[in-house]
Image (tube, rainbow, N blue to C red; front, side, top):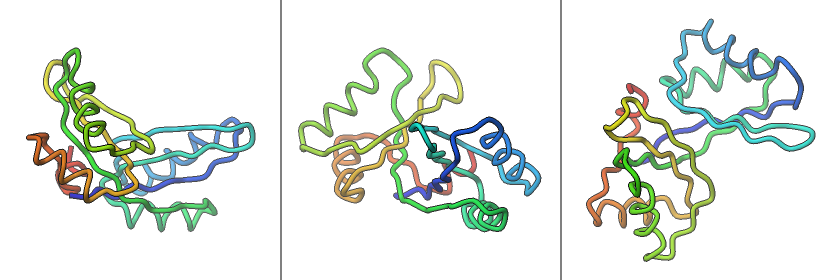
Length: 143
């Protein structure tokens, strides 16, 4: 139940994010989810795309530093307290969240939360045991 995510290291200057998006668009790669974190000198763009291998190769070809990481995608009810319920399960099992980001396809349905844990398999297992829907990569890439 792992999802492949790519991380792109960007100089913290105008136009770099636009350049990545343009390159991916020209390669017919669709971005399903993203997160951008920055420091003074650089940013880390985390992406879930419909074709991870092609995106990674295309960006490397254009001179970007790109890494690949496994993450877990979880469906969470899009209502007050939905995320707190999932985080409570993780807290109960002393599972640390390294980082996370989210997206909603349709308001009032389910949100999808992308989690990075130090032990992905254990975290996914505990969430599934508690009745939380953990999405396979193929489903996330096709959203």
